[in-house]
Each structure stands twice: as structure tokens, then as C-alpha cells.
Length: 404
Ligand code: PMP
Image (cartoon, rainbow, N blue to C red; front, side):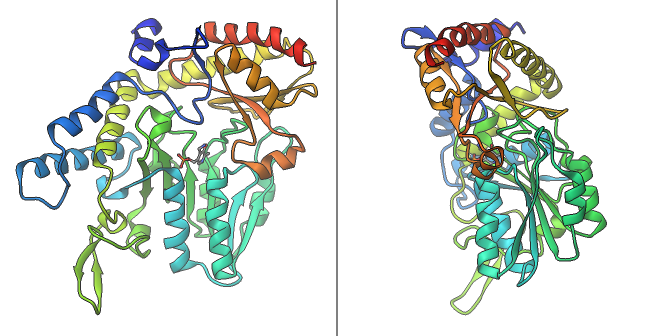
């Protein structure tokens, strides 16, 4: 399919902002939706809307089937053993909170350690901090090197008998660094420590196989992979999901309830209290089918060439400082120009129809480590083009002199 045809799949890309064509470089925050995903949401509500798992009636059975086959699509997409490894959540954030709570309840106690890294999103910091506060455990942090790669020597030293879990981003949403999760997991497993991988910024940009990297938990958000907001995924190995307690109580997660005692439902329902977003799950499955048809390897290659092109062109600008120059990058390019505040640059680019993100990107400790006010972040999706990077560069060459 030509890029022109592919872009037509995304209605919002035809919109104008301030009378100009939209250049959308904020895909790390959220992606735009293809028509097939929008249609799926509409079909859900117009053809089979009924609460799932509860009704004997026709519509409820259709909805249940749709939700459960969506679970299978997700399982296949990330290479899970089967659908019972897949828990639907509201997103990456909820999935991490679920593990921080449920794993933490069972396995983390006073003096134990939780290991994260400097480059984590707040979603992969705060839930662990809350757990450590509750349990009097200690949060340890693997430092980042100046070029944006993880300090793997420090990681080896920080992994200890006290470490109960490691939680790490597969790809940094600020630096674009692709972390060596396979090595991180292998080293942790040598000490029998499980690893949660935050895949929010990897699943949309590269083929991911959770069993190949041997992740214990892997989480991502639907809205960052061309699916709807409000639905995300927790993958977990059964050996862990079976032994940790539920996160929330309510309908659907139970086997039997009396006032004295409740027994819990089988996997994955034990972790899905209340009515799940079954319209969202089916629309997410549609998004996965969509990217699967294009091919994650093709998407990866296309976005890699955009990163290389953007990085080379950015360097034409005097005072350019790329934040994050790891050997392996994905999805994003972050930068600063001279002493220009990222917010001012972002505001002027916006007036020219270019959507970038500015600020700390929900990773304040990382921004503090670099001692900078934040960054301007371009982040790419499958529909972005070199021509858009050229438009962005034209805009940069107008606005940078205005701000200098
Ligand atoms: N982790 C990373 C690396 C992210 O980039 C994001 C979103 N910016 C999140 C977690 C949180 O995702 P969500 O808000 O969809 O839960």
C-alpha cells in the first residue's frame, strides 16, 4: 500500500490546524486511529452491545465471544502462551499498579528492594514508591549514562539477594533508548528475580515476543498502538499470576461469595473486577490486526529511517543538542536548541501546524539527571513521512531565529 493510501486510513490526518496541514509528531503520547478501529467501536455499540460473561442471551454471548477473541488476538500478537496470560486493564499505568500492589502484597516486605531505572515514566516509579512506603521496602534506581543508555555495570551491582522485582522500560519515552531487556531479564533470573517490562513505547514500534525475551510481566497501552483509549494489557506468566492476590474486588473476579469468605475466579478473570471495556478490547484487537497486516517489521524499518533522517536534519540547526544518543533508539527524538525553552519552541511550532510534545514527559527524575528544563520531543508513528520532517525543519528554521 502506498503511504498516501495508508494515511487515508486515518481520518484525523486530513484535518487542518490553524488552516495548515497537520503534522502529528506526538505519537508517544497517543496515536491516531484508523477507520477500521473507529468502525469496530461503532459496530460494537450498534451490533452486539451487552454485558459480557453474565447473560445467557444472544447479544451477551456475542459480546463475550468478541472480548475473549480479542484476548486471543493480543496473546498471539505478543507471543503469549495462551489467552489466560492476558489481563485487560485501563492501560500501562493500571497494569503496573496492579503488579506493584498484588506482587507487592505477596512478595515484598520490610528491607526488601525494588529495582527500577532513572529513565522510567512516572507510571513506573510512583506505584513502586507507594509499595515501598507501605511495606518499608527500599526503591533502588539503576543510573543512566550520559548518552542515554542504562549503566549495566551498576545494574549488575544493584541486583542483590534483597531484590524482589525489577521493573524497567523497554523503550524510554524521552530518550528513545531501547534497553537490552533480554540481558536485564537473564541477569535478574540468575538471581530468581522476576522482571516487569513497560512496553508502552515498544509494542507500537517493533515486533515483541514476551516469551522470547522471557519477561515475567509485560504491559502496554492500547491508545499508543492505534487502538482506543481506556484499554491496555497486562501479560503475566501463569506461575506468577496464579500466586499473587487480586488487585480489586468486585463482580467477575469471584468464584463464590459469602459474607464470611470469597473465593476467586480463574485466570485471567481474577484480575478483571467489574465490567471490562469489552468495546475497547475488541477495538484494540482490530488495531493489532491492522498493524499486523502492515507488518511490525516494516513499521519498525520505516520509523527507524524517520529517526535517522530527523536526527541528521536536526543537526543542521545551530545550537542543537539531541538528548539521548543511545546506540539503539526507537520512536522518539528529544532535543533542545541553545537556551531556548522547550515550551516556547513547542508553542511556535504548534502555530505552524506541527504537534510536538514539550516538558518533562512524565519522567522528572530523568530530566533532573540531565539538569535541563525539559525537552522538545518528536515521536513518530507508522503514518509519518520524511516530507513531514521537511515541513517541520522549514518551521524550525523560521522559529529558532525568532527565539534566539
Ligand atoms: N510508560 C511509558 C514508557 C510511557 O511512555 C507511558 C505513556 N506516556 C506510560 C508508561 C503510561 O501510559 P498510560 O498513560 O497509557 O497508562
